[in-house]
View 1 (cartoon, rainbow, N blue to C red):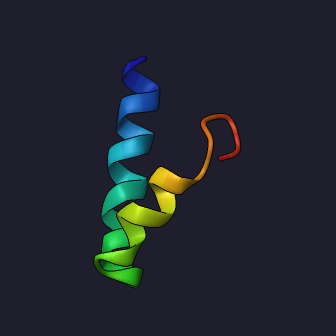
View 2: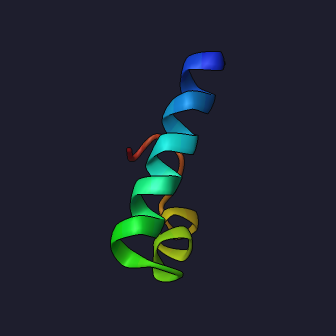
Length: 35
């Protein structure tokens, strides 16, 4: 789980940096397992 947490946090930061506020919304709209 630690690995997944790190990936999720990193991915969240990257999405926020690139897409801004839309990033988290896009991530939440993607079903788990897709990424």
